[in-house]
Length: 311
Image (cartoon, rainbow, N blue to C red; front, side):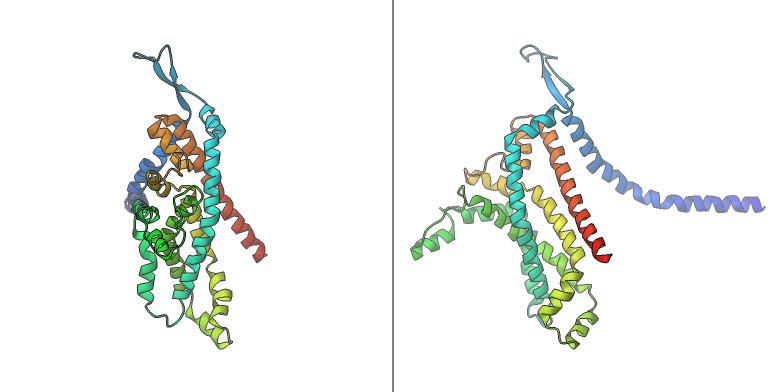
């Protein structure tokens, strides 16, 4: 009789142990199908190439063979990829600090006590993030076009110069402005939520000690926002390295944006315009590795500094 009891209890314990894995199965399957398999297929394609025999006509004249690292060497030797990568790094160097600085400023202003129209202001700042990047780029594109821009009309009415915002020297800043307009609201909400989690007793103690709102923001709020700032910085860096929608949407409106203006635009051209999916796969893997290295390196740098300060 005790043996039977132990057997039943062991079976129940086994079923209870298996329950979490049963609930995790759909998520794991979705992760494998939508994340791991596409990555594996991209790596597989990056190691292949098409070998043409004869004139390339007829069945069997074009066969897929193993290429090793040839596609990677060709991608790294392509000057358009290097030019696009340097442009994206400059884009990120300008966009990331400005975006996070404005998001932090708006979050601190909205977190002040007795701020009027706080909810309306919060929604108004966040609302541009809800607009898809393609639609936002189209809206800004028509605002940039000299023939349809109300800014040029106003400057012309005032007798001032009418700049070409989609020209060679200004289109870079036009793309930065679109990303800035759409991304500040998201980061502001993240930082504002983190501010709301800070105990109010800290602020009250600081005010009793005679601290002004500026001193409270500088000495209490910003230091406690460091984890949220690190998270938003990583997200913004990843989005910056993958910039595609804004310049791709503006490209039909100007001759200043080439088909390889960013690395992702080059990947799109190789995959769908020149039908070289193997080169596109190799470039995709390179971009993914660079994004991983930069994000992981930034996190390691932050962790080392935090560990050094604790010591």
